[in-house]
Length: 406
Ligand code: GTR
Image (tube, rainbow, N blue to C red; front, side, top):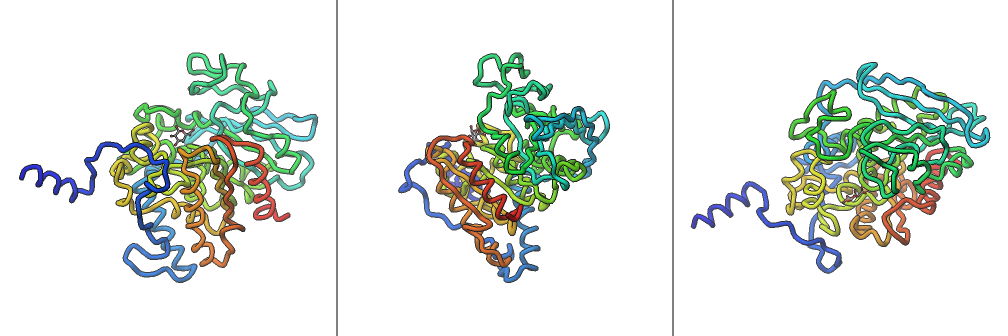
């Protein structure tokens, strides 16, 4: 009897007491589920026109903030204090390399170092890819002109590239993920930041990075992904002031956890003209209710600092989520959205990523757009969890047709 009452209580509370289940890699084992309807208000009224959508959009955005990524704490300062530290010719004069230290909230506040590499000889600023890197700005190109990051550095697979949690010279140019010359040759600028400048990626109780300034979040306030996304908007604030960049044509890019971040940045900040998710998986492009590969319980256990403290209530309980990730994609509408997956990256659930991108289509249609195949692009590449030139070719192509207008 006691046990019965206890299980009844657990059910009523909406929490599952079940142990974490092993990952699903077999399509036959994917449970049946019903996705929340993006075009129906929470009170059951249908969304029938673009004006309705604006209201419904705010409702969905709020649900994602409240239950998944966290709200930006009230009253924090969005003010930035940028200082240009270097501006030189680069790539045999084809480009300009600029380093800008952007302090948050006050002139001596915590900072992030933005590296901007832009084509020369344009009268207006250039369309720009903005995205975080995992290992420091110096990993994207071998040039010794690029400053090493000063903040805490995650471990590297490259021997000697990180010593005592700091980046060393050995890491220069070791990433294959940033085809800088290709961007420049296509007339596109690159703006990149080491993500650990904003919030070092470990569960430290929110004491470092910008949290040292803004304090410990409440249960429904931002985790690291929310914080990283917010700082991308501050980077865009800066780009709006820099003549090298055309800030009306900025595509926000991210791979993996940083793809979750670029999606949330694009959802929260409509100034981003295009949003790119590369292999972002669980908590990114993949539908949570499919429970395929990595799922909510695993991600909240492995990375307790990424989301807000309400999200773990959905561990092994995805159907109770008031939203699913197709609605995150819908928040990007009517802007260009690229979702890239890799066939061997089953942990990120390529099919769930596709369904999610396709699931945003009705909102694009409502807004008079063509949607899937036009503003919404999906590709599945052969190979592993990574960013390759093939991925970039897809993103460049979409950027040119949907944003630059070529
Ligand atoms: C994995 C994590 C994924 C993905 C990836 C990454 O360990 O399970 O959600 O974010 O890390 O960011 O490299």
